[in-house]
Length: 72
Image 1: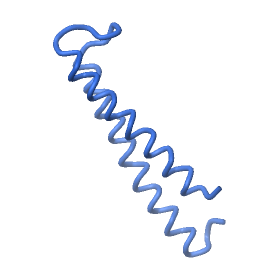
Image 2: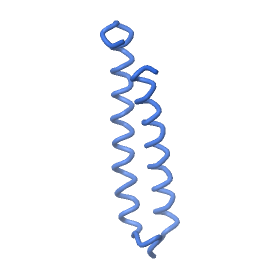
Image 3: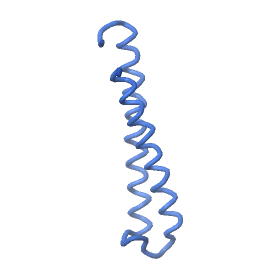
């Protein structure tokens, strides 16, 4: 499997985790949900989304390198 496909799969996985974390933060409201506050959920969601964006840029970069033949 190509490296770009693996990175793309991780991108989708982290993106879904970020969305699920944001939903959990909204559901938590002002109370605790499994011992974690709303602010913690939303901050973690933001970090996961930034990681997903970075992985998207990384995927595009690796696809370009694979098209040039620099990465097999």
